[in-house]
Amino acid sequence: MTQEPGVDAGVVREEPMNRRNRTTSRRPATAMAAAATIPLLVVLVVAAGWGLVLPVPAAAQEAAWTAPRTADGQPDLQGIWSNNTATPLERPEAFAGKDALTEEELAELRARAAELRDSEQAGNLLGDLLVQQLLDDPNFQEFDAGTGNYNSFWLVERELDARTSLIVDPPDGRLPPMTEAALARFAARAGAPGHPAGPESLPLNERCITFGAPNLLAGYNSYFQILQTPDHVVVLQELIHDARVIPVDQRPSLDETIRQWHGDSRGRWEGDSLVVETANYSSTASLYGASRHSRVTERFTRVDADTVEYVVTYDDPETWVQPWTVMIPLKKSAPGDAVYEYACHEGNYAMEGILAGARKLEAEGR
Image 1: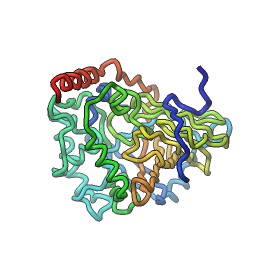
Image 2: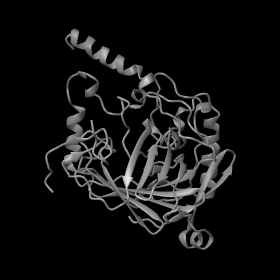
Image 3: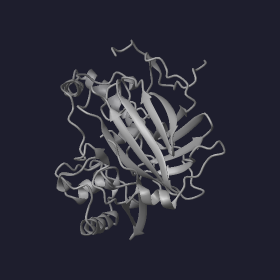
Image 4: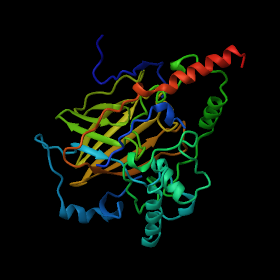
């Protein structure tokens, strides 16, 4: 079977629309089902095992550092990069109106984080849970209260950041409101009756297929390997080993009827930045609740030898009332580090249990 270049295994044709320290464990996916920005130089200061990230104006970075180039003259982004920031996606209510912590606030947060890391159950170091727990957020929920969490031995060190949210636009650091259509879509999905008829009825992440790309989750298999040729850039995502092969040779986009789990990406170079625009997502894509009409723009800029400034904008008028943008500092891994296989199907025992339970309930008439 042949496959059209640039089309991934999750291709679906639809009708045209109307215009380190790394995590070493591999938890099966079923267990996890639960604008403009000013370029910044991110400097990592390590103390007591935790990182403090402070912004420095772009003018200072330009005077002190020049991005390396590949043999064909493009900015060299190659290497293994980590997203282990502890900055939450959205600004917590406790930090409302404040885009950065004071030194005193950050010191207190770091001290509490050190205590948590020394505890027996440190699984809440994953994703946004760390900061939520440190702030006693009323919305905090245990990552896996039923079976227990990882202890800190298995978890990567998180980099506590003075910033209070990854979201830089809207300026309040919060996701924009959802549209009425999106709210209705979510309500219908939540109220859908019945049990899964088979594995195809379950989300892609529970089937160990993909968690979606780009993936913003920090602290859990959140490493990326970037490779470059003159006409392509490859971004390998450790989580479920997703690799995106992105043309940068100005070839045309796929027809809009061709839909893929990771969409159809096209890249271009703008100065020292790689800009990637992606559309043509399938209806089953995992993209933070967005619809298949979503457009995602990524910007990779190497701002020093050890940092890539990663800016992502999500634009989906069918889901949010306005676009939203995040900025994540990706940190370069130590020489010799590798992105290891994400073993998922091999330990996905919960899939069998989910389907067996569904058949039992059906047999009982429930």
